[in-house]
Structures are given as structure tokens and as C-alpha cells.
Length: 350
Image (cartoon, rainbow, N blue to C red; front, side, top):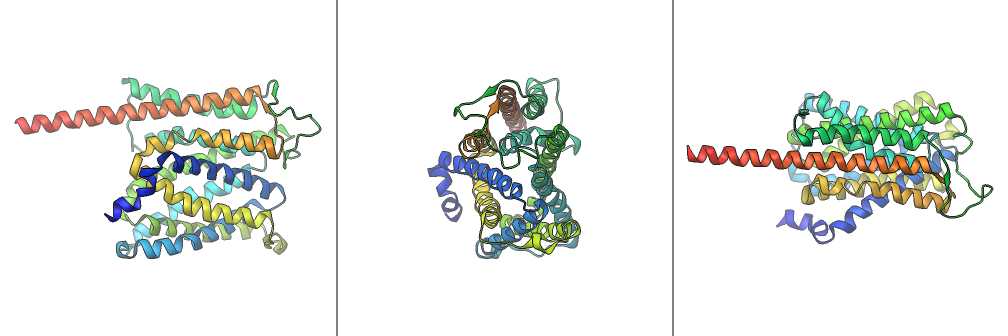
């Protein structure tokens, strides 16, 4: 009864919930971009974000999972620390640094590469097997190539301007357009953004065995946020020693940090976890392209950003590659389920 109540909001309004998740991620890209473009140090941003996330997750972990908290052996604590270092600290710091040099729209677009990168990491760690003799295996490989190619095309290929809002060239504004003028910085930003997504994909792959060892998910998230907070503060203090860069005021910077820490890491984490458990990972992942469209629309309204034909073509490739990977994964699950049923039936007959 308790478990059904826990996911009641997901079962009644699954589409509203997953759409809200994509709006939240779009807000993360837009607000992170705005705060860092206004001069906030990206590493300080991540340190404060993780601190607020830790505080936000603490009451959920305490009140919802008091009975599920078993003592952790030191090897598991060490594993959580390592996963936090790569999956949270490295990924978020790379993302925040890279967003200096790319648009918020590209940051959202690159999220669509995560399922493909997760597939690559799963192959490298032998979590999944690569079956090129089966059609679903070929679909995942082709989808991965298309998805990563789409990200490259989106970032580097311009072409004619597509000005939906009819802004004049004098009206258009990007909070970090002066930083994006150098092509080498743009390429660097794109590569770092893809590396950030690769680190996040590694984090996703490592979560499955970790959750089996420690099923209290909120407490696990709290520990990872706490470790990431400590690591991010050490990282930020080693790079940014100017105390004035650490001061927070009642402005957009504070709102952006609080939003990313409370809404994205706190509320959205629980909603996404609930959606995956209730409706499955494919249902949740299939809505990921919405983040790109939401971010592009808001960027056009707020910053009067003009897209190029190359960006639109890259976005189409990104989304197409994503659905190709998801389709291949879905077929693989179906084939495995049918095989398991056949084996069970054969054992029953024997």
C-alpha cells in the first residue's frame, strides 16, 4: 500500500510528470548559463549547488528511509566516494565550465547523447554485450553514431540563419556571445560538454550495482551529494582563491544555485526515479528531446537567440539517434524476455 501511494502521482499523471522533468532540466541549462555568463565562477557555482542539494536531500533521506539505512562497510563507502568524484563532481564541473563557451540550447541538445554514451560505457565495462549479428544490436550502434554526429553537427555546422522570431541582428543577444566568438573556444566547450555527459553516463552505469548493495535511494543520493560537495569545494578553492568570488547576494546567481540544488537534484531526482520505477526507463528517456525544444524556444524569447540550419539538422540527428538507441534497447529487452520464457517453459516440461 505504501509503495502504491509513493508512485500515485506518477501513475495518475505520467505525462505531466515527465514533461515537468524536461522543463526543470531546461531551466537548469538556462539558469546555469545566465549565472556563469554574468561572471560567477563555474566551480564555485557547482560547490554551492552541491551544498544546497545536500541540505535539500537530508530531510527526505531521514524521514522516508529511516528503516532502510543499514551500516555501510568501508569498501562501499569508498566506491560511493569514487562514483561521486567522477559521476557528480567531474561531470558537473565540466558542464559548468563548458557552458561558458556554448549556448544553453547546445547544452540541452547534448543531453540527448547520454543514452548513446551510456551504451558505449556499458560495452566498455562489459555490463552489456555488443551483438552486431542481431538487428537490435545494429540499431544501438547506428543510433550511437548518429547521436554523437548530431551533437557535432549541432555545435560546429552553421549554415543559413533560421529566425523564427524575426529578430534583427542588432536585437540578438547571448549572455556569453563574446566568449563564443573564438572558434577554438567553441570546439573546446563542445568537447568538454560531451565529456561531461560521458562522465554522467558512467555514473548511470555504476548506479545499478550500487543500488543493489544499498537500496535506500535517497540516502544513497544524499551521500553522493555530500561527497561531491566536499570534492567540489576543494576543487573550487584550489582554483578560485579570490574571496569576493565566493560571495552570494540576493540576485540571479543565488536563485540559479538554489534552483539547481533544490529543484533539479532534490525534486527532479525523486520524480525521475519514481517515473523509471513506475513506467520504465524507456518511457522516461523518450521525453528527453523536449529539453532541447524548450531551451531553444526560451532562448529565442529571452536572449533572442537565432538558430542556424546546421543546428536544426544536428538536432534532428540527435533526436533520431536517441530513438534509434531506445528502439534497439527495447527490442533487446523483448528478445531477452521471450528467451527467458522459453527457457522456463522448457524446464517445466522436463
